[in-house]
Length: 399
Image (cartoon, rainbow, N blue to C red; front, side, top):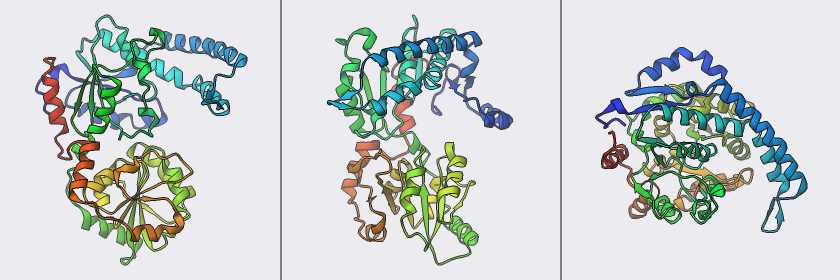
């Protein structure tokens, strides 16, 4: 939002999940929020205790009603395969926190927008859990803002969160079965935009690039970070492996890498910041090789110092790829694959052939690299925010 001139009519609506960390880090969080360039509102201030109590009472009633319905018939046949052992427990589990959380968020957002007259509600929630209910509650307002979706995840057809059924959004579908959807879409790359146009032929869909990549420009600290790693490990001969983790993929990374021979490498764990502590704890408990972490440095800076980068779901793998760094992904039967096999990032499938895979890496031509960039991220030029704001200004709203 940096290029937006009229900051008075823009704000952040912040969802601070209740936790012990929130209490312990209260003052540091408050200080960070105070540095935001526009107004900031805390989401949970816009829902009452009576509304929360009502949500839990209604959910409990619906739990018993659903349980009664499920006891009479098996609704879980997919292509004539009985999937009830997997899907039925998932429905039951959803009544023990997930549904309540979704409704609390949705009602709080509705209350905020009802009280504050904003023209646009911008989110990167896409069609992830909770967000369909949020869209439904926003659309129930008599005077509502545009719902603007900013593509956050790396699109590919195997990602079930982004696998949409066209019938769910069709006007021919009965209203109570129809899914709500955003009004305007901003896609990272051309492939996802094409997919969205097929699902939503009458919606405004724009290709602007990845906001995350706008932060990719950084000072190269390769030499200084290498010195720090060598000093910690007291070994100047070993090559450096950086392990990039994403949202909760540490289990299958550890499962795969524990069957590889990494004894001749200095290993640096670079975890997703949202799960850094839990990921580090998991590695300490389950990873059989020594490793270090460099909390003071961003993963982008640490990657520059690597001789080899090993990744699972992390989108930073694309940044490493476009920068010509030595990056490989891991694919393991321990977990379904969430990445696109057509993105040309080398994949390790067999731990026993770890060295063999590294020796046979193929160089990607410049022309093919350009096609991949456009397909997934449009332009890797750190100007996504500028393109986004230019389009938003053309809507003649409050920008």
